[in-house]
Length: 487
Figure (cartoon, rainbow, N blue to C red):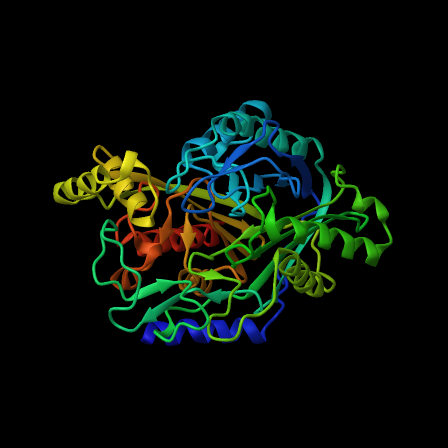
């Protein structure tokens, strides 16, 4: 209870303190800050493709919105740091590492100075098995070279720059989607590794059995802005902690993340009178929205009547929140850049022999072995874990940009975790990039594991140990502190 009171006080602080600026950087006349951006089209060349955003695979052949990889590179006299945000549901560790290896070969940039994250849109080609969906092999082979290309182009576009940041607020599009339910009413899953669940995801607006949300959310819209020496916009890199908005109709789309990028471009163009910012093929300016700590959050307010929203409205409203604070950002010619990475080993939650046998017996009863229900999918996942590794290697990154802190975490992090990292960080402000440098499923705090529910159910992609969250959280705070104490 004390922890929740502490975190909710942080939420209140964020809501009433919308803007921070960098105040104490020391200018260096002998050093130059540079920035480069790129926006590379990564729409699949072969259709249909497998999309893995749901329990069962979709085979999609219609492109509603192009998919992009958007890149920002920062460089000073001591460091190079690269951020790539990809229109993808998630990127497995092996694929992220391959992307970094290719980029290193072509640019010389160290792999541990590259952040590659997914937006978590559920309307992009599958890169890894998820529930009953396989990876789309052609797209998985296609994408690493495109991400390396994005980094190459950003490096080629490096120019002297100035940088600043601010934090805005959008409480209208992020709500906790996990609820404590009346005993015996939460959805159960016999092959989940959990019993007597008390939590339920997406319980419905009119469900009378829900008691209360299981945690807070982070409503901040964090903004990192880069301009040229002549004050021409180069990049606006944002971060927000809602899951995704959702795109109807079985089509490919970058969801609200893509709408945000175009809306920001339009709004800035209107302010400065530069219609070249409208050119989607141009690398002159790139707006980027990254996913934050949205593991237990989405756009639906389950405590109130259904509100109208779609991915277009969420993109417009988050863009407006970003532009509101962007207009007053203070810029600096030079700031310290630093980055550190640590890979930690965590145990995996594995099924017992008895659980595996029960899953095999269940699958044997299915006509023609065809999966039809969520229980069928979890039974199959259980059998796939017979020889699953006992541990996983988890990459964790921390970045300093002047007095701004950034973290990169490889999973779906809960809002309460992100808020605690922000509160404990020596850098103010700090924002957290989720689904970065690999994917290890949901990372619930231990007390959330006790409640069970979908986000805790074990699969081949969602099986980190119960204590994974405090270990990841404490590691990234230690990394931030190590950066803050460097001379």
